[in-house]
Length: 306
Image (tube, rainbow, N blue to C red; front, side, top):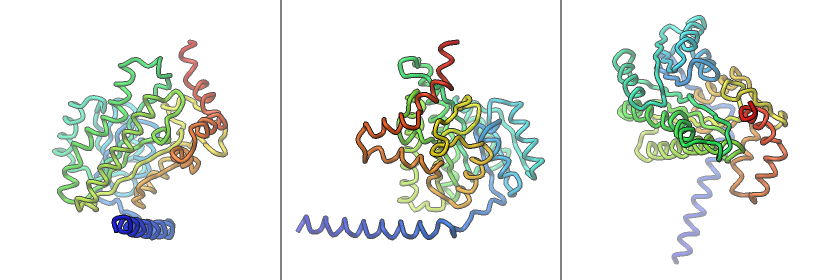
């Protein structure tokens, strides 16, 4: 009897999963889009790269932009360009996202001077590109403070207000490296895996807590041609292209509009998530086939020689 009940429940779950997959497939091209007018959008790491381009894509949509970065000049330039693109309200703050006290202090300022953030885009990040044995303890701690703990602290600062009104959107930049550990990326992959696990857990808590009005989007790209990638060049661009920041930003803004949970780009990055179904040697073969170690050595290995 016990086994029969287990089998019955498993079949019901599979049936439910099947209908969810069908619904998701048919909604890919017809999913309603979010309207941004009146939203208060905070973007970390907004002084350049993807952060700047996302700000510019959002600028004409009627949002209030809040820009956080330690690069004051770059952030002012993002503000200027955003206003040229149609943004009416742009607020620029110097914030070191690797410093918990600074994050909370600036968050309090925003609540008083701007209002409650309704769309939080955690974008700040670093990539050392060092091998594990070359990483100092300080390197590991810095990577986690900027890539992971900065997101913990911003979520702690702004999520409670979203929960109170059951409205908001959490957008976290993770990485394909968070789906599978990659060469010269032990600290980076670990920090990005932590982001994915945390955001999935928060989404589960919100869902089961009746807070479905708060949406979550996890971004898992391959390399984007920003300062972070330091000239990384893909050896297999047909499978794993290095996207331009402007194109990546357009995909991100579209994913937020469509309230997608995952944004995986390019599509080949899905292969990294299949690692649990494959022998370890198959994952290493993929690494070798796309010549990822060679690309990382060319982009990051020169530092050791200089």
